[in-house]
Length: 638
Image 1 (cartoon, rainbow, N blue to C red):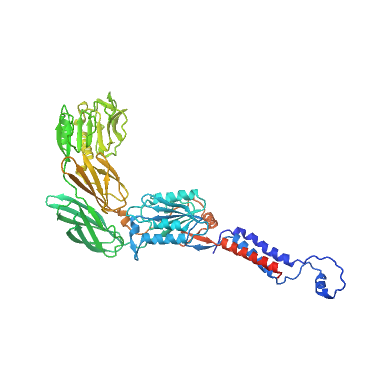
Image 2: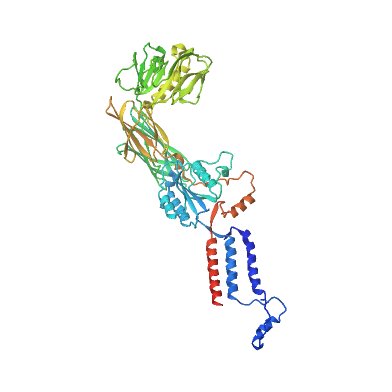
């Protein structure tokens, strides 16, 4: 039993006050009567000198004392510990990440979490409100400050586990922000605590995220045993496809099991076994697999807590080359030689701009000329000389100052040293949305790159003959970086990716129709243009197929990419989720405990906050009932 307002015990003084009223003798008046024979008992009372009389048994007195005691008891707000809501406004946060799909005792952790949250909702008292938050890759508020149990339960049953990760920090920050704006709020988290570490190295765990008010963490699981496919890669060789499969044991016991390799048509291609120690990994190699667009690896082991990470798809790395077209009216020996050394493209040369339908290319290189419209494919533009709808050309300016890399961590700038490069003059252009500056000399922008109309574009403002760049080591390195970035569609497959993340998908230039097929078999047409598409991956693991129909070459091109569960979700070991109370460092713990007690909170043996169910309204109702009975007794003259 808890007492939430012990300061109101002073009202107990009303009990002796009521009793004193029954101890005082009533004042009487002298009245002349014919005889005192019938008044002997009354005369005995009048003859007493003391103003007090002996307390007699009186039903009215007992009822009044009982009503007074109940009213005082209601004022001190008695409460009993409950497994329900922990505050007048409770924020329920339910983890829906991939690790919540782990099974224990015939139930998934998610099912256990929902059952615990359901108990909290069922035990809601009158006036208590609930806000429901789903802790997924991005936190989502399903219901805000509702007092209707049915609506809360309906929203709770609408939640579903997903194979993606949970952003715990974002979910806790959202819950903390709501709690800080609503007085009398508390947070209850239902999950296994998996995910990112919420505190920085060297800091205490409690210093991670601040939650004002009470916080309770409901652990949804205990098991740590799980074996997962950590990585699966394949590569086309001269004698077939070679594959490497890494198996991770996240548990505390050694594990043995079987491996099966399937093709795209679900035919069994190869089998194997594995034996991996606790907390270790094992790599298994497969050789001479039949040529397939994609392969699926499946493992089976005993006492495996999570089945969703027991398979993985792999799309082989191809060795094909993209089509690159160099348009250089005056010819450029330096540029031609540099492009020929890049192994990811097959180079074609033209002396004039293409006219009409010249076919699509993976990469167009324009040297000293500017097309009026962007062609189908990515573009490398060198020394522009005129203004177009897509290029705000402003003329030529002398270059003063040393060249400097504006974004040294950009993939185009990797291993490129511009300190020894000199440029005499360069083209000047206005702001181009989607492009970022890579190299600058003083106020002059010399090299820019980015995405324009869905196509990757790199602009080099100066003519190579007006600089000593071709004589410097930076030239072949930069050209390799630029061509690889511009023609990555042919050098590596799409993906792989994680559920819920943004994936840059390279598109085949010139495709007239595109259709994306998801692992569950559903298809959706894509209305996208250009050579790059930013795809928000759904919460669905497996093999995705992108079908593109082109006007030239094959009638359709099918490309695949895989989406796998995060390795962090495969580590299903439950963790305790702790947060700070929102107090500054050095706050007195005694003061904090007093504040918790005043707000109806206490700590259990694990240091977690527990809730309390107030009995105030029930006791007050009983007191009113006693007052009504006392009034009836008085009316009947007892």
